[in-house]
Amino acid sequence: MKFDVSSSELLKKLQVASGSINPNPVLPILEDFLFDLQDNTLTITATNLETSIICHVEVLAQEDGKIAVPAKILLDTLRALPDQPVTFTADIETSGITLKSSYGEYKLAGDKTDDFPQIPSEDDVNVVVLNNDTVNNAIGKTIFATSNDELRLSMTGVYVQVDFNKIIFVATDAHKLVKYSFGNISSETTSSFIVPKKGLTLLKNAVNDEEEISMSFNKKNVFFSFGDTKVICRLIDAKYPDYNAVIPVDNPNKLVLGRRDFQNSLKRIAIYANKTTNQVILSLTEASLTISAQDLDFSNEATEQLSCNYEGDPMTIGFNAKFLIEMLGVLESDDVVLELSSPNRAGILLPSEQEEGENLLMLVMPVMMSN
Image (cartoon, rainbow, N blue to C red; front, side, top):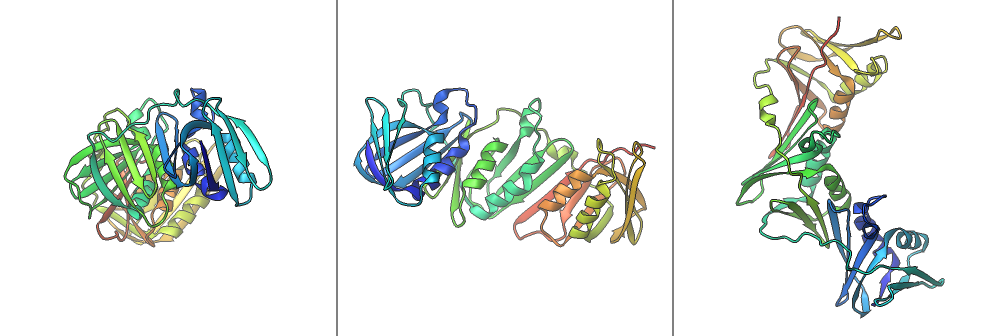
């Protein structure tokens, strides 16, 4: 196996693929890239058994072949080289690999490809073509709300509902929930599945700017294809909770205020909150919002007032400041709307203006106020 390639081109593809290589893999072969050279196209595959990434790069091939290459040493070598043509040679019999640059020669030991895991293939899939910006948006606005609790397996991923010409992304950790839906897609199916957080993070990092993304899925895997890259995620096999049941429908109390002012005020007040609960108290009256916090253990307390538009009954409600700050950081509108029903029911946070064809709703559970 032998080919010539630009060192920076190869490095770019390897860095994308390396996202799916775990630091301490369960099998030694999972520390490797699988190189498969056919007709001037090098296919690079990396996997951690949950997420696989496949990239293609055009090379000048002299001899086709297939070998497993240790990822770390190859990446480190290419990172240390300035951009230049390199020649990659592998002896398939001995698994010896030689990399030649204008500076010299580097030898490393490869592995046989027999042990490399079988990558899932797109059998019996449904396909939806999506806009790259929409996918990035959907991931960015939901992924932070997923749970890290492995006992609640379904909540550790993002729930995706395909409903003909609409897709809904949902994430929750039982304290907060985000629902982001968008239309203008063409699909001939209704389906739902849960994509692991890690896979979506890798997808977001791998996608470049101008491409459409083809999303195909079956009962076990979802395949995201764009340009010369494919990200394959094994789906989480669990039942997602009925998220609609926790979204309160009747919220007569409505607060409208500047997003940045609200977020900055919360950041200051949170410094004085109890470090376990991060509780801040919102006291609402017709024209003003009072945000306060206290930490009785250390005799710390703080209060600020913000002007706002509030329609509804006077109310005092407690929230985890960390959750609110995080949510406000994901929203992009200048003003936000907080809809409330009562001090012991979830609050609904919305952008004041929604993009056409999109709908974003965030829910945050209250922190019960202690006297």
